[in-house]
Length: 239
Ligand code: FES
Image (cartoon, rainbow, N blue to C red):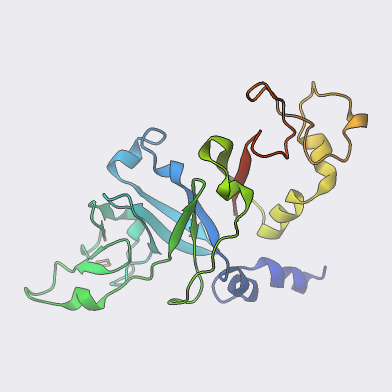
């Protein structure tokens, strides 16, 4: 691949050609577990996270009803970072002058304005629609106002929670490098095995090790079988 072709398919920020294509598909944003106070006690006090998706800086927060909001991170007033905002349960308040936004991005308060001001009714921060599947929040970054496409009905989304898990990792590479290794058939026979597995000769060419590490209801299932073993979907945050 030529350098300019590589640039074309790996640059995915706002205003790039590949970024425009990717914004027509839902993208994983965060795990619901990241907001679980049992796993991260800070979330009991302040369920707010800074996230970066497709080269965009965003803020993700959950209100007291449990709804998530994904907004542009720079305050529409003077650009302060909303990831440092106060989550007041019914909205996120900018730390600079106190403008407050609900999960839809609607401004609900502009406290420094004169009494009776209706300014906040005309202020709206860009919000990105979210949908949750199997513990993963997917965002839609397409043109504002356009209806997001449905997510494909892959097995990891239809299997019960007892048979799925989601995980997230940080890879210091671009999306194409991450994807390329994911579909690389040669590595799976060697990398996704335990040292004590059977000899390699009989398993070369399999996508994963031959069977689950332990019994599931008395059965040792092959890694590709559902629902005997977990389905999975992962988020890879690529730099
Ligand atoms: S910069 Fe956010 S309220 Fe002023």
